[in-house]
Image (cartoon, rainbow over all chains, first blue to last red; front, top):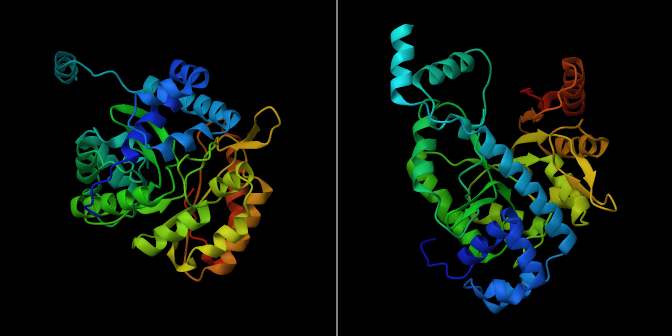
Length: 91
Length: 249
């Protein structure tokens, strides 16, 4: 607790993008070293990412993308102030 | 009640929930804190959680052992984190931040996963043991998540249950999923299907190990069957647990 954590935040950022961005996932599959070089990953982290089972990665990222699309579609659009006021007034 | 659905709610909606709480037991469930992360929990979201939960001081609440974002990228779902020391330290730190803000620790739920998190040094059961050793939290045991992960990553779910202190188990989630993948060798925790037989067996095994009462929640997010089928599923859970059942549909 309280100690600086150096390596993992970049791995989480990398994984968050890998799980949610289809184009990024395809680029990673074609050229993993180039894609990983943009992130501050340790050698251990790079090695572990290269060992990801591609079938698992496809299934997981597909699931994450579907869920993400659904959640984003459910976010209610912000109602403008004047509409709220008009609604209260008419009520 | 999914806390995240009420983060920007009106006073009227809070009143509606309080009215409901006065009549039926409510349990509050968070998704968006991302506690199992080497990043600090998002302070704006935490502030909203805290503001919401202050309206329900007598209720328990839960969150997941998951990360949900990385530097500006919202996953909008629960990702199993790298099971290593850095994440454990991050989880401990985030639990303390949450405690300082909300005044209580969440009950922590084991997430389902289709992918083995890279850079993990521990198997899931060891990871759960470490969390129990290093933090004071109670556990929400999601038996379908456990079952799904045991199939997806080929481990023994009974040994997993044996490895965690039974007195830490405060609640149980039951749900169903479906087989996916070319070889149908993976289970997706969809919450759209009936509770499978294997999950009832895990419930029976867990119920024998615990002495305390458990809150049991049947999760269903869509493709709703007739209510009689859901009541039948709860009834089966009730008969398995006997006296330990307190049943929240």
